[in-house]
Image 1 (cartoon, rainbow, N blue to C red):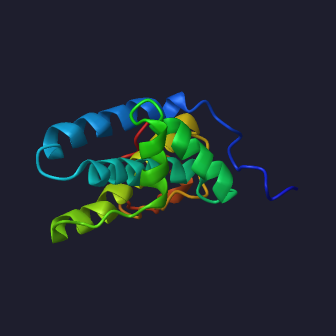
Image 2: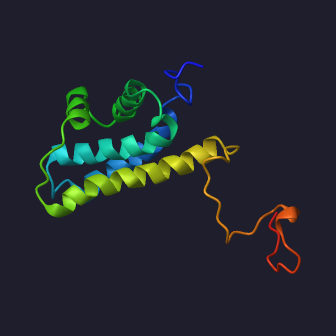
Length: 150
């Protein structure tokens, strides 16, 4: 098997468009008057990086970068995409620097939920929650009072 091939074949980047657009609008409405344009662009790029990571994070970095750039195109002109993907802006305040990491984590969370929706059969990467009731009767011990959920 060729390791250069993406785990998920090149998907239509439209699956990421709605989330990226919502993030862009939220960043614009919340921070446009408070922080520099390059910081907002970088926040969006980090969100998109996180959003696409569950799909492309383990693939060839060039493929992942291309997907990120494609997802950013509706929101940013090419020169700002290039800058946001290659340059970390100087954070004008400490909270902005923390936001750079936090927003990528939010993107990863949203990307995982999207991946689960797009590929519901995946089981291997799901973390088993011991407190969640199982729908498999053989998983229940005698006297276990947890109800089976359909």
